[in-house]
Amino acid sequence: MKYMIMMFGDQNTMVETKTPEWIRNMIAFMEDLNRELEESGELVDSQGLVDPSQATTVRFQEGAPIPTDGPFAEAKESLAGYFIIDATDERVMEIASRIVATIEEPIEVRRVADAPPEEYTS
Image (cartoon, rainbow, N blue to C red; front, top):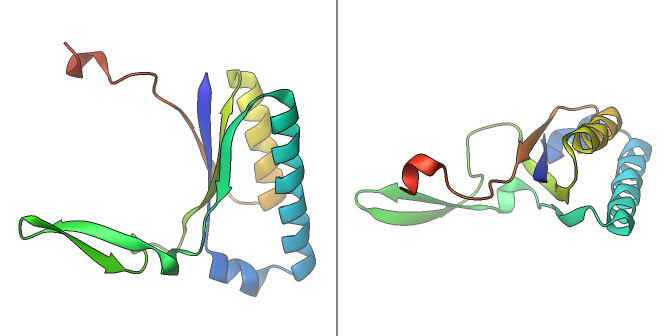
């Protein structure tokens, strides 16, 4: 099964609260994990995302989509990066646990849907 492992954070706070060594070690861990997942054939995709201050939000207002600059939500933490992997439930939890132990922040693991729910397709 395919799973998305989503990592959240506040990039500005990370720079203010973590040491440069911690940040370098975290980046090295992510690069090593990426390489490991590529070599095992489990990696479908992974990306880090730019700071949300560089995002564009598109909202539906007054009957039309309206794009605006800035963060997509009024939240301190936002999606910072993700992995999509093809692995067993047990393996996904092992990988997620390793990530959490490194970044010291919660992450979200969600199965990628194979198809829309049945109640919407019949």
